[in-house]
Image (cartoon, rainbow, N blue to C red):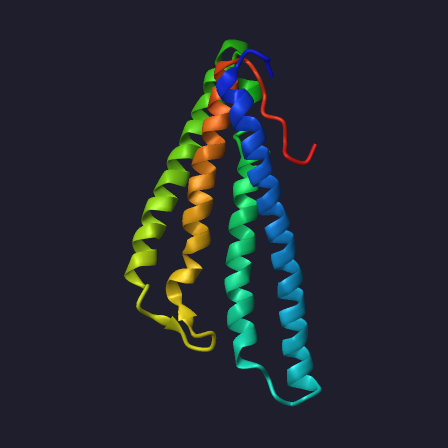
Length: 171
């Protein structure tokens, strides 16, 4: 990364911090999923009293973990970026093609955030029966991940425009 690129110099550490935070949250979520499912199995087979909330909570947590992981995958360029087409392209088309991939990823993130926001508001009055929380809680990570995908895609586009690369958060 060039030292003179102020937007990238500011955006990269902020995005790297956000990506690390998302990954820590995802890892914590996986640990909670394991604990919840273990409790459900213990309750079912040892206590002969299955906790009704365990399955619903595990399903909600899977959505949170997956969405945070997907956003970080975009930040760390771990998503499918059409690398199989790159060897077929002339050298001068590689950067514009990479920008196109990130623009399409940005559009996807924006559409995901918007449409999931619409869904979030439409189900806000409904409750997940066994948890007693709003159904909208299922859509919060989708909206957040969409916004993060937009933010991380902007970082990649700025980096490509400057002839730099985004360093993964886990380097």
